[in-house]
Image 1 (tube, one colour):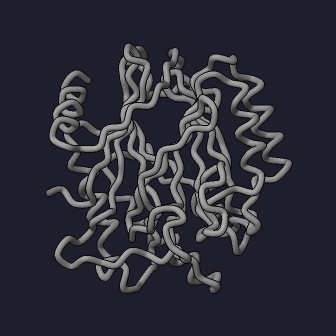
Image 2 (cartoon, helix red, strand yellow):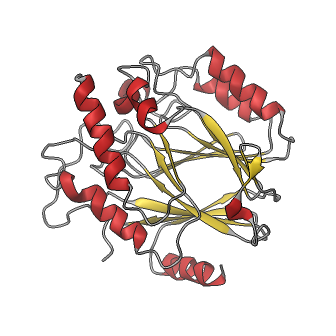
Length: 304
């Protein structure tokens, strides 16, 4: 991974956004209790994954007149990465909301078809409120399975928390108990990464940029020393700390949204025909064992 470290250093010198989040971790090689084939042969090496978010397949509007091709361009950019990521995570709002159950399933099917073009086949998903809040995730589950789950990769315990299937923007008592029970099985210094769609803290509640019982989830997570949260929903890069827990939001792949609380409504930023895809992107997240950090590199939709 030394070539990737050098790339990140050069990107930082050239003005690229590189955010370092402390996350030391030890090594294991199990996924859902089974040996992870990707962990064999490089169990003590660095690894990186890619986070994509808020693709909103089915959206049509002035905020992105090229919405029909934006996700495809992003996939082409991911496929062009010199070193393939070990896995890819989509953090919700795979599709744009619709009241029509048939149309919802068509959009989910279209998203699944488009993302099947990814060269990396270890791809994981979670819903956003656009995918799941109108039917408690029923249609989503038909295509992608459970809305909450865990997996382990090279010593990092990943937890996917569903804070969107409840239309009231809550995690719910049952899932909070599930989270608490899961973490009780982990050592206090275990290396834990949490994926959510909405932020777990009150970023901008009047814009629905919060989780009603997110503070309860954070309190559960605070019992462990090494926790990092990655989320989507707000369509922009944002970094926040709750105690020793770092929270990092990802850019969208459909349209950008304004700075939290900067205006009355969270209307999409205007499309700039002179700079198409401005404010859109995805990220590489590199875990480095020796430096005990996560390095986040923001990348544009297009390869150029």
